[in-house]
Length: 79
Picture 1 (tube, rainbow, N blue to C red):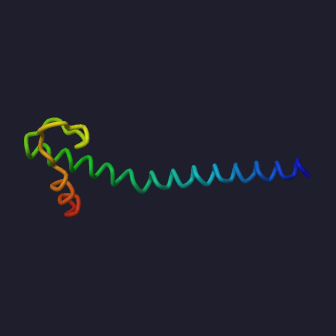
Picture 2: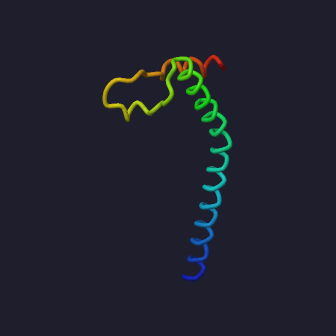
Picture 3: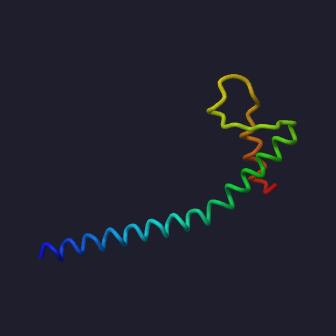
């Protein structure tokens, strides 16, 4: 009986891992095009401002130009 319970637990774990992998794959297939669109838009907005490098706002200690709202607006407009 202990072996049967162990087999059930093992099967549940395998199914959980398989489901998790399927969810991860689906999530990537849905989010990657959105992420790519955002990256492309960041590049376009930065270029329009003559900015060669863009970093995450959390990495900036002082100065810089925050492009966040402009990028959000451009993505929302489908540019």
